[in-house]
Amino acid sequence: MPTKLIQVRKTIGHTVEGKPIRKSFYAKTKREGERKYLEFLKEAEKENKTALHYTFSEFSKVWLETKRDEVNDNTYKQTYLTNMKVLEAAFGDKLLESITQINLQKFFSAQSGISKSKMDKLYLIANAVFSTAFENDLIDKNPMTKVKKGQVSNPKELRTYTDQQYRFVIDFAKEHPYGLGVFIMLKTGLRRSELFALKWDSIDFGKKIMYIKNAAVKEFGSYVIDKTKTFSSMRQIPLDDEFVNHLKNQTQHSEYIITLGSKLNQIADLDNWTKRRYNPFILDLSEFYIAEKEKANVENYDPLPKLRIHELRHTYGTLLYRSGTDVYTVSKILGHADVQITTKIYVHDTVEDIRSRIDFTKLP
Picture 1 (cartoon, one colour):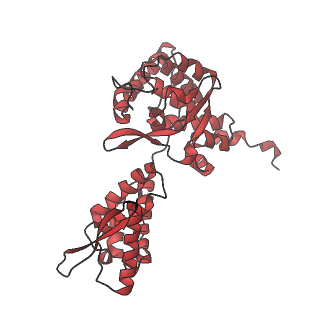
Picture 2: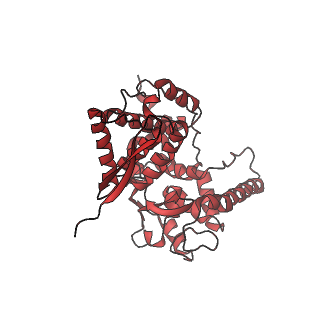
Picture 3: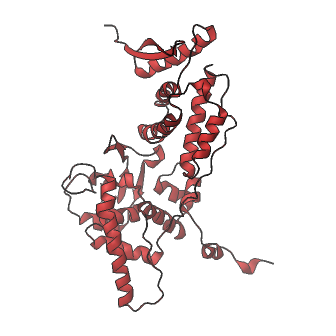
């Protein structure tokens, strides 16, 4: 029985009056059909069959389809689809050949103030789209060639707990009704998305190992289980006795360790959990910390920072490093693809850390 072919119907140009010219491409898969479309555009332009004109939006959709095989679903949705929407809002209905270097430079200059990561992704995608269009002879040159990125905002400095504060928060989290998620992140360095995908069968209590294979990602307004951020994020994390003993004492109401409200066998909404669990926890923690210092008549004590959720992960990585764990091991535990990421973002030496590694007596 012959294989049923899928029809991919595309705009292959516009008439002088501006009406779209449509053509069908048949293939076994949609992606194969998109590739046939790209090949047609290139050949048609070479043979000058018709005046081919494509809007940024029309071509970007084809380009996006070609990326599906190259990246995982999480990266495709959160990086490519999300940032392409920003570019389409600015250039969507404009013909590719009408978009100039000046247009693009104004766009990137207007993005000033966004994060470096966001700026880099927008630039990479815009350049890739126009490069592909140029390579397929749809435009005479790549207008991104001399475009410069706009100014980016200074990233917020990541904070951590001190050793003493870390111990205080761990003990408090073990007793607080909303403290389980905080306890797990401070003990393992999980990403928030990984925490919410964590199931009880992800932990081998006998071997004291946690297996990280999935992450919770937002799709069409709700969270679903997907692959981890990168291949390196799939990892095994060694656990200490305190972690194992505390988790063993928890009542297992659901297959998921972190739940919210009555939705026991569903993935907890990360945003709601932050509002309804994490923020109240931090408020209670701060009040208890101040009360304990006043009870002990401690003067001029360091205030307890109100960490953002991601800074719990940062705290664990930093304390591991400062306790003597090598950077490579810290990188493996945190699930980084490159040890340089660990060094640049998560490992920060204080002047006293640096001093402790210098033997001034050996200097001439």
